[in-house]
Length: 175
Image (cartoon, rainbow, N blue to C red):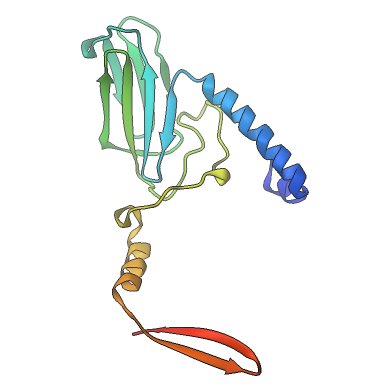
């Protein structure tokens, strides 16, 4: 991953090459992890493959505010470490799917921040390149939500056309 200063000094063509190299490196690093993960602003979902036929009682899963551990009884942990950010333990869950994968849902405490990795000792992704999907109003923090709600409720009541020395400007006023 390049530093912002280095990246800013590159030409558009060099940036494109660097972006492609970074994406390829990230893809290889992420593929080597013992799990796959995705995230939205408010949560992280992790899929951990386990041997086919695994039952819930065979699993040892610990979800804490700062730590995550997944393993099978009597065996080495599949993954274990410190989470890169804090989570809401009471809102985080895990389920065993088709007796061959564990789905872990972690609720972020800070719902306005992308995670660079799940566990601090695992490779990071470049969060500057994330293109978020559409957000729900409920995903926004209180201040931003209030501002958006005001904009949605107040009608645009007037449209004025101003002509000033050959320049045209449209002015919207909100009441």
